[in-house]
Image (cartoon, rainbow, N blue to C red):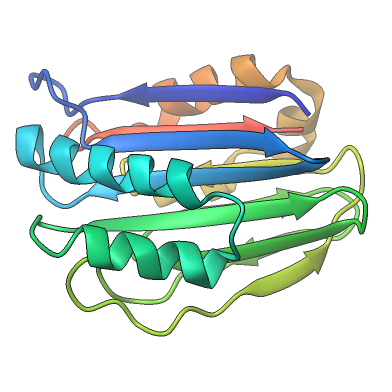
Length: 188
């Protein structure tokens, strides 16, 4: 699988409260987008702690990873995050999200996943894992709320033709909000 990633802090801020983690293991991949609440150093600290927690528990189920992160982040401002897990051996994709992280599959069986309301580290809801068939060649688009919802207007036909890094860079340029940290991942 190839990954294109574009991430940047809120313009004028040196700390990026958005982070991501991509972990490939045992013919599986875990893709995470993390958005620390607020901006600046406190958001970056919360996201960094969350990322380290995911790295320590990446091979557990999504609900369990969220639980570990929720405990770890209790003394921070918290984060919103989405995690997408692909099991290539069984052609299954699973998604779980808390807060305003968006994830879509563009391909044979398109789907737009919905995250649950809440904050990891503060008032995390029960985690609901959404499962979906995965077909080799499907394109995954995940992003924080620093990417405008207008990205839904970005034609799938163009996205599917572009190299994943080129697509991520273009989405950031066209849809990155000027008043927020932003992260977008395109995977195929």
